[in-house]
Length: 255
Image (cartoon, rainbow, N blue to C red; front, side):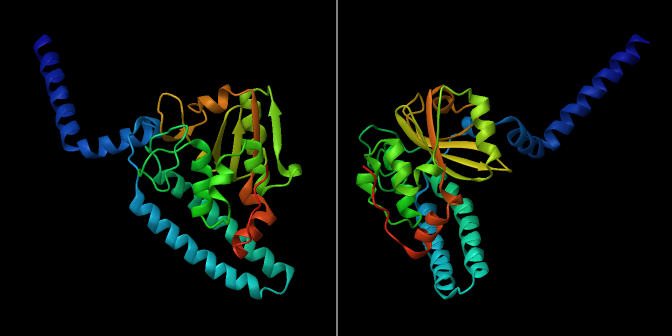
């Protein structure tokens, strides 16, 4: 009886080993899909894709700009702005992620992923410029975070929270709906991407241990979590911002 049990165990282990080898590729895909995060995967800057995305986004913007110029009814205007928002919320995170792995530096002013080092303010202003917003890239990057947000949004559309519990802050943020936010912290500025598929992603040029552009989940966004002061505004949900993007209207930097 012992012999039969041992024989069965050996056969079972052999079958498991064979199955693991035969389906090793599928197992690897399943593992990386379900048990790894973007925080654990090394990603390099992608300037080539960045340039292609900028070109395609500008093409889409110009097509919408033409329709917007000929729109006559409130319904037509609303529809073009709705499409503009969809495009920006889809493409802005792609632009940001092309920068992943680009080194951070307090004085970094790189204009393209991987072409040098970049500070948090320059990361935000460069993304906005390259997405088609007519801004003063250098002047905007050098402003306090609240002024950066105020350049795009009126004060009534900015949300300032001091000393608020992190989970409560995120719950309030998510309750306002999807969008691309610029968020200012005690000494930092970044993007918050909020959507049903990914939840909340914190994308920024980080001065922490990573010292590079990173894409962090809510649980790994330690700078956001640890800040006592948070101010944010949903730029893709604002009619004025969408109008300015469609018409290439300049934004005057708040100072």
